[in-house]
Image (cartoon, rainbow, N blue to C red; front, side):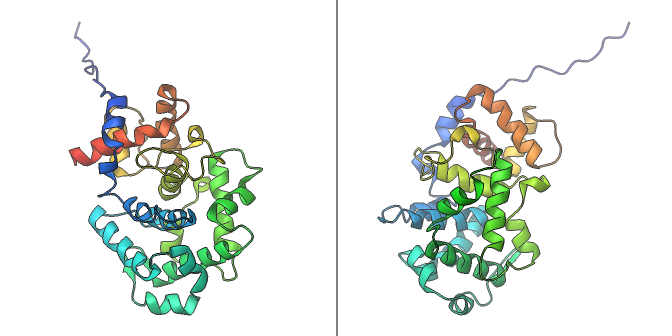
Length: 268
């Protein structure tokens, strides 16, 4: 009788050791999170929140191009971004970013984001955190909360969001089974608190609720180690990867994002 070939047993890395290895302050310099960290010395914590939101949204593509684009966005905002977005008008932003272009996004998308941020910081919500609390209170799953927050950001302002592909790409909806990587990255930065993440929203959302920010590096390593067998980089895949690591650390499964992302970058 012919012998049936068996797949060799896979040797898994020490996920905890890897998470510790890559969750270091040295990680910040080459990462988009360096932008909000540059404002961490200011007394108004909303400056970090504001710049973290913009940095997370534009974190797609090559890392060097991301950093270049983020510096281009940050320059007109000056030393106090929240004051800038509250004081500048839509027309002023249009002048500042005339000709802006980054892959899927044009000046129209960026001007809307900055104008809308100004509206939010001037409103009764006073912050993105306030907007999140107001719109997600009765929601249960994180996907529902992101959806509600997204809808309020896009539709509650004085001007409607542009119907561009770039805006739809930036503000992807998990209820449409998008991985919503940029929202999940922003939430990781805001909710977790360590050498890298800020913990500014730790009082309204638990790290246990977070979902992996699913990018190419994370997805590749997750499939390599059979953490997921799904082929699509969507919300269900992000949930499956998160579920695997939730068994290891129920209180903070996304801490292992550092391990998968770090392995993916070093192997690429």
